[in-house]
Amino acid sequence: MILPGATLGMLGGGQLGRMFTTAAQTMGYKVIVLDPDKNSPAGIIADQHICAAYTDEAALTELAQHCAAITTEFENIPASTLAFLEKRTVVHPSSSALASTQNRNTEKIFIRAQGIATVPFVRITSRDDFADISTQIKFPAILKVATFGYDGKGQIVCEDVQAAYEAFDALGQKECVLEQRIDLEREISVVLARGEDGQITAFPVAENVHINGILHSTTVPSAAAETQQQAAIEMAGKIADGLDYVGTMAVEFFVSKQGEIIANEIAPRPHNSGHYTLDACKTSQFEQQVRMLCGLPAGSSQLISPVVMINILGDVWGNSQPDWDKLLNQPDIKLHLYGKREARAGRKMGHFNVLADTTDLAMQSANTVFEDIK
Ligand code: ADP
Ligand code: MG
Image (tube, rainbow, N blue to C red):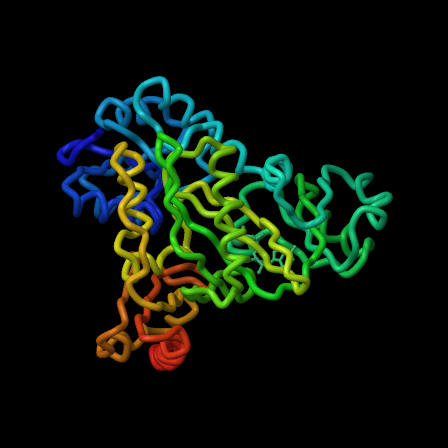
């Protein structure tokens, strides 16, 4: 076990790294963040910030020398960076677990190999791949870049084959996945922690609403049928086992109109839909990440209160700061801001959690406050 007083390393300085850093420091660990941005949300609160590229071997060597264990908040850290660090210190998740999730095509192939459904999809690497596409998937479909997409970026909805050709050109003819668009009943996700011993502790299933491909709200408990929630938790566990994953991770699922549970994507890190755990569970997803990294037993993932989490995007800023007083005068609402210097449209600046006796009451209160602060 790695105990308080030790130094932990974090690859990536975004909000997920920041919330990990806060959790680790609360427990008495020191944190070194490596991120190329000198104003990164995690870097500015860490005990030390190594401001360098993820491929800078001198910087990685320095990080490994000082850290008892290293983790990440960002799935696009090159797997070779983790492999370099693995030779020098403890690293979780592993380079191979990360590699399996970095490309949407290999990720879906991996999920299917675990016996879990994905949407019908076709890997696209050239215009020739569209030739007999209609025999493989139905339109409308969504063309997504295979790597580096997030928050709905690098995705184009295609009504027919012709549109798919044009979308492929618009995305620079990079490797893509063409996915059938599913009629969604709802979207849910499972955030879980898995230890070196294979023990899994799942958080309660989160129900998510996306707007323009970006997460808007998470509600817990979910209104999905109990059997569907259990099925999702089981599938996420299978995926974690298949990756031999150590740490906190998430799996996003679609629930189709026919009631089918379909895995959408894997996040090899804490997840936005797990931010509700910061205020509504006995242990947060970030404390769990610290615990898994350090070889400690998982904390209880028990839900303390119904909760609604709302993301605060840069759009809410307009010409001035949002009216925080209208949020902060609510005794059951918890504000989390990430310390980003610049507010941009679509950029995640913070979130708030609303605790209430029921999810309906939490949602009403969340909607009112969200309008008030704008
Ligand atoms: P990102 O990596 O940007 O989160 P996702 O693949 O999760 O990309 O897509 C973002 C959102 O877009 C999903 O949460 C869902 O709301 C919608 N979406 C994506 N793919 C599909 C699909 N095949 N069918 C229906 N909706 C989809
Ligand atoms: Mg997603």
